[in-house]
Image (cartoon, rainbow, N blue to C red; front, top):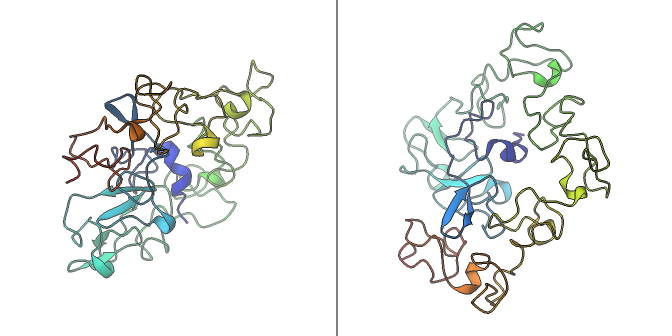
Length: 303
């Protein structure tokens, strides 16, 4: 199975086929609230109010997305082309045009070809026909390094597990043992996460800064317009470390922003306060769209 969910934090919505290089065909696929009201930014996290399966939001169960959307590295995006045509989402009942076939990513591609070649992951047979992903499927011997210059004939990056290195080091996430061999992602895997002991240097431990922020009691993304505390949004930050962003209780029917009846910062409770900082941006942000704003607050974009 392709490690899509594990790669999303690293690749920030990279399109299939580019996972080894980090380039992106869907750089705008994930949108969340910006640091200032009215200035949304793109980020790997779509925030707690983005409903699964909707445009620019996480894919649902079994990589499901709403009609006319396709799941690209765990994010649902719209492809600006006719369903059923080459490179576009498949039509009803997986229908595609002549000489095209609907692949497991719900995209129409030339029948017998693989759209995910040279991405560092063998996509046969789960995603591509046999023989269509030659380079990525070159290495076949478990425990034997088969890359060029290291005893084999396969391209660099196609057998890093057996060759004893990791291309995802120091990205803030421990990639052992699923994506990288044990001992090849030492900094990211140094700390024992959520054990109640701070393992970072200068705070009682020997691990790099940012590797154990939960146990060390801080949040690297405070006041970015998104609540990152784990108790409120399944985020990465411990309770109380993102107080400004987590001040309000969204969608409870009570406006909690300062000057509007509450004590929370502007932009922290837009849903309940009845306005939308992304109105008139040619994208519907009401519940039927990105679900970042309340009903009726983005009328021009949500006819």
